[in-house]
Length: 112
Image (cartoon, rainbow, N blue to C red; front, side):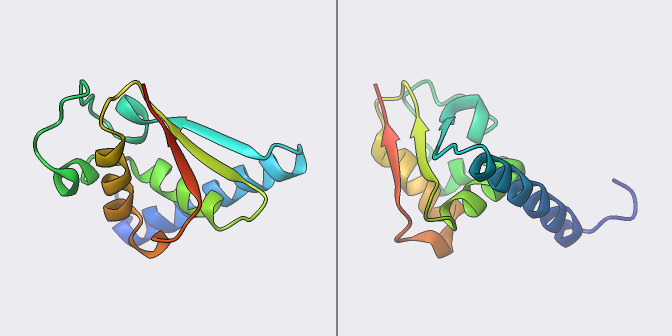
């Protein structure tokens, strides 16, 4: 967007994510389950990603990075990343790179 900085875009994404999380709480929803391939990340790993977690973390969509941060900050919202991938450890490492300040965050990964 013309005239916007990356920081402004990040702030906008975070504001939207907080609205999402607040809406979930208001409706009594306690689980946020998000698919990994072609959702959290903009690519499909085909269950055989070989380029490393750090590279794959570059494909995490900003809106989902913000949504995960906002949801993980809430004790009443449980976060689950769902996938058919047979590489759940890779996904765990991607999330560590994408959300570096959430190392002890409580989320689960449900794989094939």
